[in-house]
Image 1: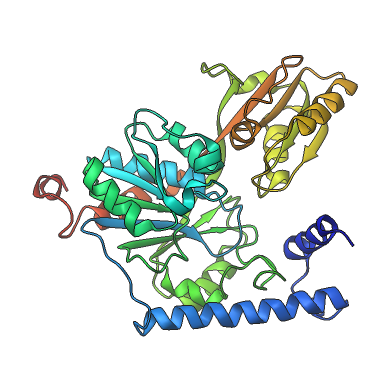
Image 2 (image 1 turned 90 degrees about the horizontal axis):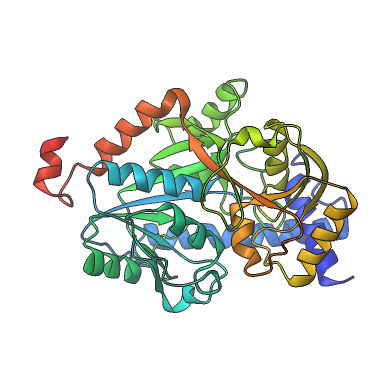
Length: 383
């Protein structure tokens, strides 16, 4: 068995494995299940050490808001971080975003991805998601680093930030925060119920008790609301619950800044590809906009495209006699300079809509983040 085969088999079990199926239906599944149990014990021990102050937490002289999840990937953290950071900026707060910088070599040493005006380092250093975030955070600095405390101190000293937004910060217990927003995919909030590597959970479900509020993403209706609320209430009673959807917000041709109308996709023969946590979601979105997908290639999350990958994609697209190739903003970042010009490449941007919960969510954030000792009196007065 090759490593690639084992990885794909593990991912299938994590994503598609049934929680009700026997844990020992195969030797491989038994091994994953046992690894999951060991992992779960390690997570519980780590949380316990922080609870009992054996492991210490650092605190910063500003408000800290964490946006995270309890499962691996696919809940929409990146568009949510952009939405929340821009919302807080609209309140008059001096906001900075701190990301670990997964996949970039600056995550260990730290670095400033953007000063709010100019992107200062590329995706190889920052990672793909921070690079994408930087393009959406106008006037909001973005820093990366595994040490969020050190990055936060730099954001305060360099940019005068009085609010920090932690991207993917729910498991980062080393830094105290004022608000923990926990995102969960409403279609399958806890995956198959198992911790990694047998399932998608990064922590046992009981740890949602640390959340200040819940955001159910990819909301499609109220059919499962009662069941989800009962689980949330069992582990974290009294926390507010908000609902949002991922919505297509921009379409543009790669290399051109001017957006084009989303209706452009209607009736087009498209060859699509993506390397995100939920590739099928991208495919459904394009189809929902009227695009006729005649070919589709999917890659693993955070996939860095080689020249050979791009040649394979464009060869497949040409064979289908299509109008355009289409991908996501994150994939565009991961393509680098490997950009053929033989067929137009359309790029679809995704945003967040809270719909009927917009006012409630805005009021909740404003109340929580503009009250207290870490904001100026002028901002308190405006509240």
